[in-house]
Length: 415
Image (cartoon, rainbow, N blue to C red; front, side, top):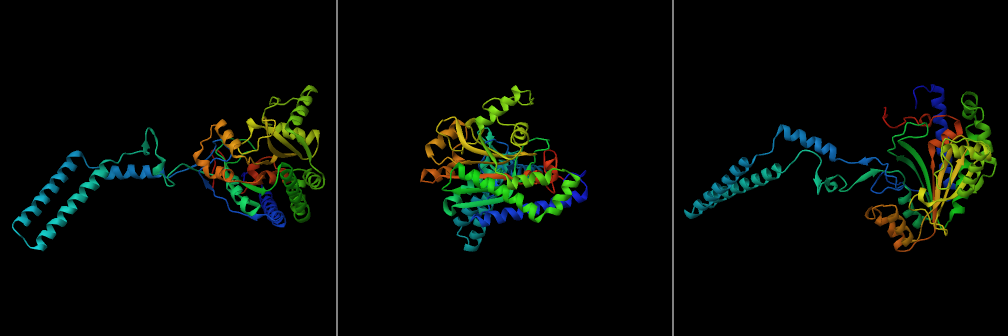
């Protein structure tokens, strides 16, 4: 948490996080969801953005090797040839002992010396091949020599793994840390953040929106029922409107509009004199200022936007019949903008494979994921909520780095 945040605020944030965490577990438990632990280390990029932290031991192993080679330089060609001459000499010794019919003990000792000489040469030849630096093959880094024998990363989402469990358990969720190597210093980004992700089998986009709305409402009501003392603190010290905002979100149905309708509303606002820093046209990824205009000005409550252009969404989102949009949805809230992102997943193998090729994704790391479609599947959907954004939405804090005890961001990993 930022050092400029006073201690009472720190402790109040900690209690709000605790309350929201407990509310999350209560909501999913009461709705029949099974909690699943998804891996923090993965070989596939869920979002396809490429902004991932790589997990590797190649660098540390290369540093160790370099230090070792400095202390114990590899043998030269002359050293290896000299060792081979010793093999020849030991072989002659064995032959000589056999020719004079020496005792078995003498011959056995000579054979043992010959074997040692051969092993010594093998070790010297292996060591002579050692080269400082990261191992390479065909001009590229040789990940087969890495710890996992392939490229591995810190996860940006547990969704792909969660889908495999949804096929067996029907409704599942996970709650854990995720990582994004985005060099951003804005008040909206963290390199390490917590995500609540759910997956539901036999469900479509409308079910996804219903569940996401119910979940947000449940958390808001939980804060009002169980965390009012801390909410009052934030209303007094940070944001006078935070309790009203949470109350409204708990009691009021969310607005629902398509992406196309959202762009039309934003375009109309521009025509009426509203100025946005980011240009408005169909096909853009809505910026925070667009999201906040929709929630704070146009509707003055949370808004769910759905059916986004396929070009700005991930490969796993179900392609709609118009072939231009995907069955994706975002829950937008005042103060924060996007709080939840979700979608109906593409269950058709051929369509997903085509989308992956279209986006230039490598197929091999996703073979296991494609198998979930290749051998039969069901319609399913899910969503992910940024936990720190929920804390920010509740408390009214301006900087998301103040919503987590030990923030990690570009250039910063204190404590």
